[in-house]
Image (cartoon, rainbow, N blue to C red; front, side):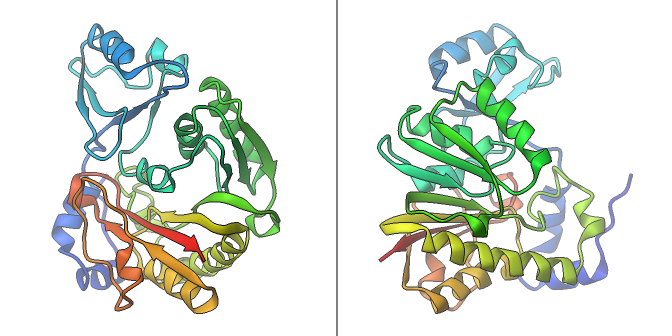
Length: 297
């Protein structure tokens, strides 16, 4: 099936990127990556097991214990005993970044505000060595089941699941991850239907929710706590504009993100917002992502 971009979409994003490159990488077959679940197995042991099954692995430069993976005989990456046992998690390599930037510690109280299906929750648990405490929340009941299943498969034991709107959560946390609901325009290679669904009203609706969530999340931080805001959107209204909104409303500081990857210009004149990380699909052959590391003063 041929995927055609709407003329308004082309017009909007041609102003801020090389659209032909963006289109080329957005329509490419996704490059598979896995994250070793170090709660259950070491990277060395898993690599040995997978190489015996004719898998080829290459380290992801910006994420420890993570690998680009392919099978020379086209065996599905998710169709192995090791995956079933929770020894690894199939995860886009750009999706690994928010949890790394959050940098959770064993003693932290962490909130994963929009947690399902659990990719980042299980990653956070592994980074915390299954210690401390994670509150994993989602708003929809049908999203709790995959979250619960992935936490169980990966042997996560330092996590409590809650079902409520993100704005309803009251408390004080050391670290908060807000991987916000978004248009998904950076992840077209995974969900091509995004091209047909995209419209200006959809972006406005998402931006309204994102602004509400980021204020609520920031207010739930301990003093000197860290909030990581991320989306798999390439739209300024869901990214830079949301961070500008937070800075107008709250006493927040944006921190630099130093990782071994290619990045693109942040689309803001605000010197604080320029510290955020913007990635287009063509930058690293990944999904497009936006990440902000925010400190409560």
